[in-house]
Image (cartoon, rainbow, N blue to C red; front, side, top):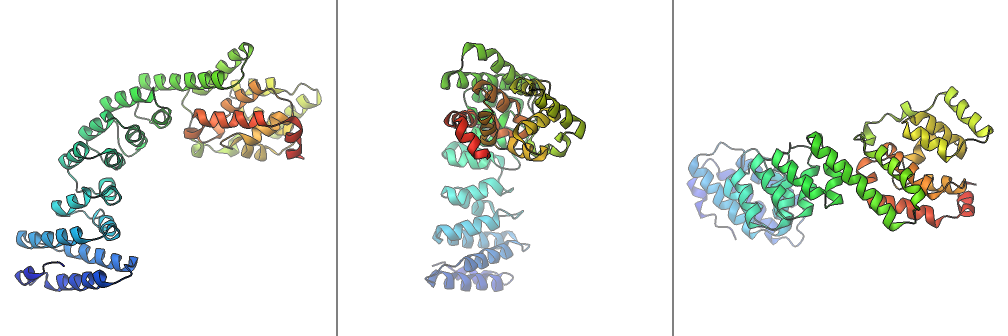
Length: 374
């Protein structure tokens, strides 16, 4: 049990401390440690810390809270961590007691508390394992020295979380180190390439690495003849030559073709010259409205329906339509790569997503694809 003999030392805090004592005693004796009881305790701790405390009172509260935390089970520690992480002022020993705890408790404080000092974060990085680094990498504010240290640790997940943290600005050193790691890691590359604070030189290196990885994957994992490699390289180059916007930033209504464009696509169909070649050429020229018009005409869809199919992350709808219309695998691959603008960018650049799209196309037969469309 907590030692409450020091209670008489402070008349100002006595009512709050008595209330906290009563709640903690009831909670300790209860067989069912309810979330409501944990919430009430954490609220009472918050109320204590909200007072203007003298140095002696702060020491008293600090000692009591440290004792409470050391005796608490994990669920109560988590509730306290969530509450204390949102406060602007918490005694350092109390906060560090939670920050040094098991990761389920610690990560809440490491991610969210603005009361942790730079030296606190540096010490935790040096003295704890990778899960603690990953939590720190997700903070909304990080000193430059901590960013640099995190970019040097040997843990891919930490680098991924640091690169994905849109609330911080990478230092020049960290950007360089993460770019070096990204050349060996698709996971890091996929998030780092989306950052706006990379210099042009590093961004170009990453885009080239994305293109090289895509090409190697397709060539090594699937039957791609030498005659198709030039077309494939052209498609990949088209994808990586500029950094695409995120899908949520695109107004797809602007990609719906006008009636005249649809008429032109239908005329191609009537003349028998609407083909994979004409669609890929439209994509190469970034004439997305004409591509959508042709794709919708080929599939017998309305333009908005065609766009919804093109937005599918793994390209299953595109695969079905291509297979049903006897479009070759190399042309399907090119279309999938060159329609990346329609999909979620951080997923579409990953080789495993490309693999799933190609594998699905390969499993389909023309007959099965046509049945799916009937």
